[in-house]
Length: 249
Ligand code: GLP
Image (cartoon, rainbow, N blue to C red; front, side):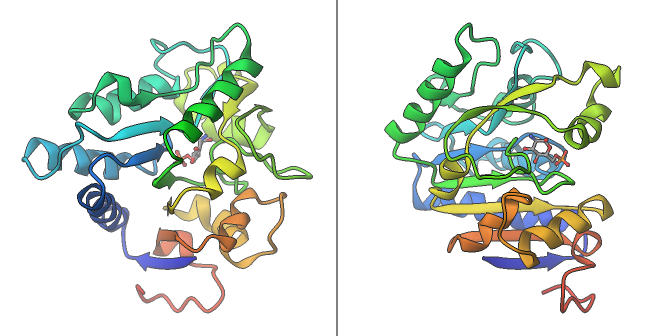
C-alpha cells in the first residue's frame, strides 16, 4: 500500500484523475469499481471534463458501483444509482450495457447479490477500484464486525454510518437501515485500488486503515495487504498518521 499526502482536496482529485486516465490509456475497456459519496466528486468532475475536452474515451469502459441502499430505486435522489448517473455517467460516453449497479429494489435480494458477484467475475474482476472511507473505516458498506464478508452481501448499516450519511437526506430517520455492498474479496481482487480521504472527519478512520491492526473492526485495514492500493489523503485526513510531518509526500 502506498500513501500519498497532498495539501488540499483539489489536489486529491487532480492526482486521482491522473491515475484513472492512465488506467484508461492502458486498458480502454477497463473495469472500474465506483464509490459514491463526497470524496470522489472532484475526481468525477475532472473525468467528465477530460471527456468533454476530448482527452478521454469511456465508450468501452465498464463500471460496477460498490453499494446501494435497499429500498431506494434509481429515481430516488438519495440512491447511489441516481448519484452515479448524475455525477459520473451522465457527463461521459459510457455504453448503457457497461453500467452495472446492484438493484436495491430486487424482490430476491440474496439472488441479486449472487448475480452481482457473478457479473463482476464474468467481467474479469475490477481493474481499478475507487474507494472512499467511512468515519468508522468502512469501505463500500463493509461495516466493522467480527469477520470480513468476502462476497456481495446484504448489510445492516451501523448507527455511525447512518449518522454520517444523514447529511444527504432531508430527514435523518430516512436513511435506510439496510444496504447491498460488494464484499471484501470483490474489493481485494481488484488489480488496483485508489482510496480517497479528505478532511478532519476521516483522520481516525485513515489511521485505523493504514496504521492500525488488520482487523474486521476496521474493514479498510485489509487494504494494507493489497500490493496495488494507493491512498491519497489531504493534510487534514493524514494529520494523525505515525511519522506524518506535515509535508506533502
Ligand atoms: C458511504 C459509502 C461509502 C463511502 C463513504 C464515505 O457510506 N457507502 O462507499 O466511501 O460513505 O463517504 P464520503 O466520501 O461522502 O465521506
